[in-house]
Length: 102
Figure (tube, one colour):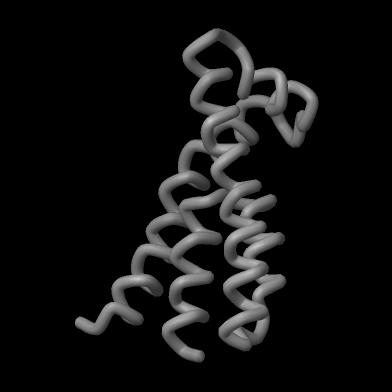
């Protein structure tokens, strides 16, 4: 298995595993986005973890945008919807896969 295949596999796993949890939340509560956001900060542990991931995504966006410009990586913008609809578990391996392709 090449590192490119590893990144692609991790992108798939990084999409499926979070959506198992997101899917169960939405199955129980419907598409209640305010409740979803409120649940991210339900207690100190959840809030700390949520802020950690959100800050990491912000740093990743800045780094990957600059890296993509320097290395002429096409389709960098795909990390934005990947981050919004899944999270860093998809956007990071997706970007690394794009980078390996370049």
